[in-house]
Image (cartoon, rainbow, N blue to C red):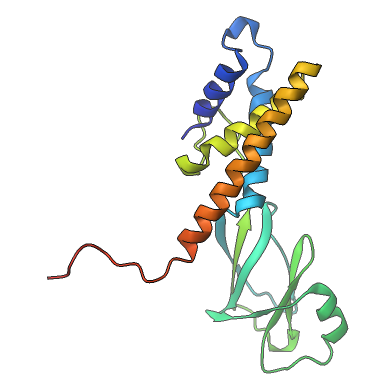
Length: 206
């Protein structure tokens, strides 16, 4: 769906559909959509990507993508690397097994160990979940239709926080409750999809 589809749905619920009398600008609403996408990214881990790095001589620290939220896995030359916490690595980096690679992260970077095993030109694959954001009304939002209501409800919750009144505070809370219920339903659905076992196709190979 496009950003404009969500904008129209939000304006319809806000009864803010006359362009010359807008109470909420497009820029404000896109800001709210991005806040909603950030919440969905965190709650449901909807978005993932792979970044490929090339090892440089005498360098074991590399910058994570700016929108990285959680590293899923790391491979060096297609071989999986053990992920350790930053604290664990700080305490054990001088005594770790020299036959295996390790990686740890801080908020902005990842570190590869042991540095002595690294060779310039090695390929490092970092698979990670990221925060999706949009800029324009014509941008596409890469979420399924199942998640559309969650995006809409959280945006409505934020919209009613701008023009505050006792009535709008209640509406903001109402939409936040709808969002929470939608998240619970989506989390259960996505869990089933990711952990399905024993499924059979109705089609028979000939």
